[in-house]
Image (cartoon, rainbow, N blue to C red; front, side, top):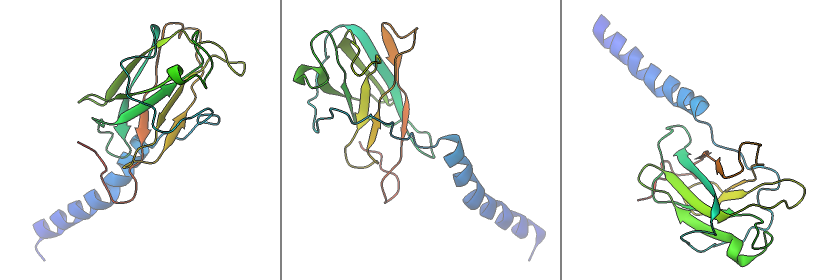
Length: 161
């Protein structure tokens, strides 16, 4: 075997075995949070907003590649000045844009269960279900960023068009 061929083969093996593992550690899937599915309603409708006065936004990425995921549905719900988490008008979905970003305007969040929090979820095919329940911090009085990373379901790259 010529030295150049051996070096090329070694590089190929290194790329196949090392870089996918490295990518997984650099962009691991977000884990579901305790209480994230509380008052969840499957199939929340696509809406323009859930009121005004507050905003949740973020970028959704794919585990491993860290690529933004365009065109997927992100669900949002919370207790607001319009009612509790079970109030149908406090549940809605929005689609991510070409850069994997979503933005949802929502009525001012009210405490439910002791802490000011919002629910953000993904439950459509292509990626594992994810339910988040981030608690608002002191600086989150008008907006919160909730970025997350989805794990493709079995079958490889699940990006939807």
